[in-house]
Amino acid sequence: MVSLLLEGVPHLKEGDVPPQGGKPGWAAVPSPRMTPWLILLNKLAQSHNLVPEFEVLSKISRHY
Image 1 (cartoon, rainbow, N blue to C red):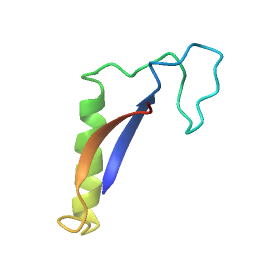
Image 2: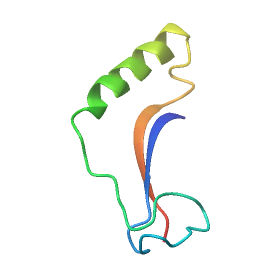
Image 3: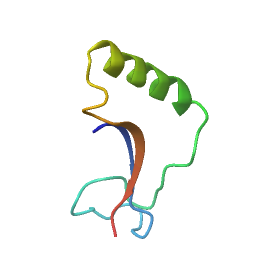
């Protein structure tokens, strides 16, 4: 898997230390500005023959 990872820990307060990392009290919002990065990542993966062995995707991770 080749991915763009957006992290947030929305259930914690700012100043808390998330045990698994991330930014406390915050969650990434969807952004159309991510599209060019995904397109570029996909082109790079294809040009280096990583596809179909690897998937290119956007992943949003929230630690609870």
